[in-house]
Length: 130
Image 1 (cartoon, rainbow, N blue to C red):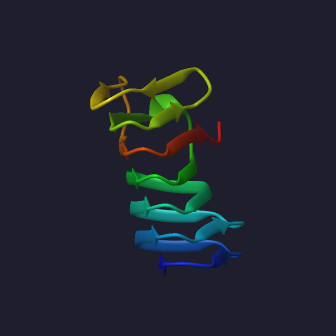
Image 2 (image 1 turned 90 degrees about the vertical axis):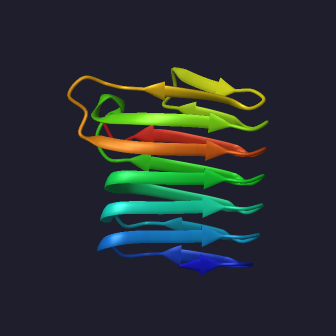
Image 3 (image 1 turned 60 degrees about the horizontal axis):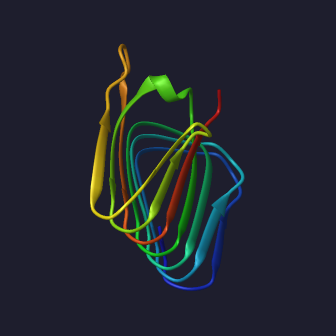
């Protein structure tokens, strides 16, 4: 799904092997659950807001825009890698990560899902359904 400009809304549940979305200067949000083996989401200067994202592997890249992801499960279900240019990451409410060119790897015992989160100068927030 490509949204270069304007607004797009996903109203229904979506079940697919691979979910890929790119938002340029526009806005995209969903109101149904998204289930996929792999999810690749990116935003340039726009806004991307996804709820109920249920994927084994999530790759998220935020340029100078804003990205909000609500991932299925809980934080400890995921191993994740954070990298940040000059932007700001927030993973759940208790962990913020910001800085110039920093990175962080988090491995949770027993986690079977993975996330790779990259933020340029924007804001990337991740929350969980549990």
